Image (cartoon, rainbow, N blue to C red):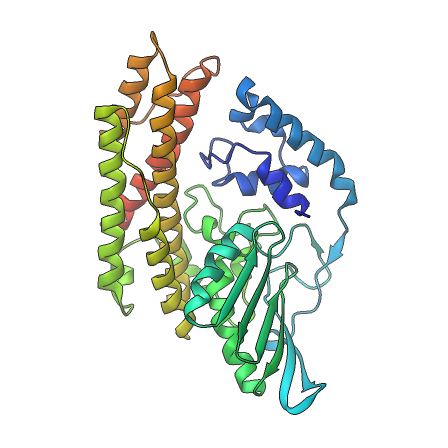
Length: 378
């Protein structure tokens, strides 16, 4: 059964337009569950077309009283809670570790430790490291197996290992996993994931405890506060290949946007390149031991997500253009042309629902283009 967090996300438009003040609908949904924001803050949910979703979200919120209050446990040194011999052999050990989410010991934990969507996206990139990788986007639960080694990743941040060679091996495997999934940690103060905080232009750095996340990682705050930039990426191995791939992805965004602006439709959009870049980035992060590199990778992953979101938004706009009829069709085409020409869109009236949806998707495209320009200029 899906968690209340996933059910609330499924009851949002999944536009990730940012008009509510959050980068992602997942963050908005989490904030709504704990009553940090009203449903009415999402302008898309006000539309008749999304009335069913709005009702579903209201229904989910009524069940939030079933949420258990959890208290943050003590952070063990290096994330290691225990190791002890396996029950069936003294030659292997079992261990329990915890990915720290920045919540001080004794404070209330409002959300799960991981964003389940990003957790599974990041875990998919561990398939080159392990024989078997499984992850549930509904439960935020993952499993990794290699040979006799079995690892379980739980929503509360615990990582259980079975049949590991020794304590040194335990910490080695934990480092690989933590450095791969750290971007999916959810900030307890607001419900944003750590990766999204890296690209939020309105973020206040002193407010978000997710920057303290990591049991064996220390996020570099000086780098976090620095602009997203290609120059800071130059010291990282494989940087040329990744820079080239990001450029190719940006070119795809511009190409498909131009197609939509000129033909009112676009060819089928695939996201294979996104997965390739993501896994290349996480491979660098998981095999290093430099906190600066981990922090830099998180920032670039944020840019990657924004470009991916832009491609999805272009697909949605292509569909919308086929639905919008006269007398508003020319207005819609002009809005897409303005997107292509980097002209900031004026927010249309909420009364014209299809035009407003086009505007909302345009926001995710403009965010990506602005971030990529920042990346090139710094």
